[in-house]
Length: 335
Image 1 (cartoon, rainbow, N blue to C red):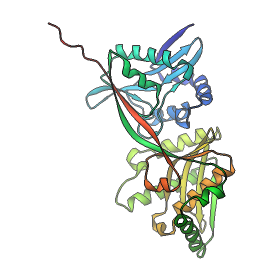
Image 2 (image 1 turned 180 degrees about the horizontal axis):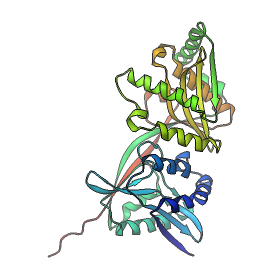
Image 3 (image 1 turned 90 degrees about the vertical axis):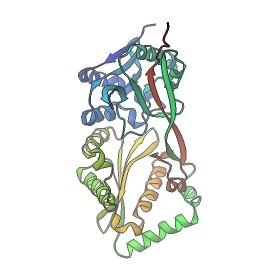
Image 4 (image 1 turned 135 degrees about the vertical axis):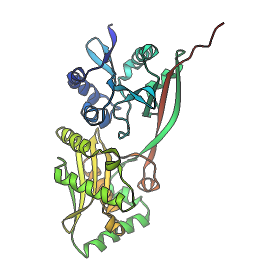
């Protein structure tokens, strides 16, 4: 059996691999939208720096693992970082389960000889096959807990789910809606194309919300608006995008950019009108989103990063994650 590791250091070569890479990730049971090349290559287009060092494991002519990395200087150290870092909540690289041992073994052998000072690989699952690198005698590998994600399992039907929420939550959502509708109509919409107008409304709400607190939000801090526009356009062509909005008096007052993948809805980015926070448009929208998830056969609503109390009130359970830091092991001095 021919098994080899290719180090991809040019963008044209990485783009050449996109079709088989996408096919393998799409068939991988553990995948999220964030392992897709459409997500990662768009991230690289907007945030990439340094030199590509993507590691591709091949069995014969089939990709069985792909660790999308780049090498750059960070805090005076040569660092290998995962493409997607910073604004991606699940960064597990694609590693086919049946070839995990061979793939990680090849990866470890490469890292023993590679020129870097630190691999800092964040937002990995708590059961990542990369954890077996801790067994290497030539590498110094540390594992630390990472910020958890959280997810609601959608059992039964929406009515049953809703009855299991607290009476206070159900009462508040109903009263918020009644109070708002005394002024004007409420409408829930789903945009599967993420039109520029819908995205403009989402970003405007997000900016207004954070500026009302005297802070800059994710869009301003990470300069990520253009990335989200680009990646939404690419993913919409695969039918993955759902941009949920609530309109009140024909104006968007709450919005969530989400991705539908393998029966799960991932709520990636949300915002609501701070001027009308007392009307609970964020809660109204989320109740509509979860109802939509049930109606369309989704099995989970994933809140992504964070375990804020409000998520638990919607029934979310934590998903543990970890961070790997890898250095070359320093040999003891000999006399």
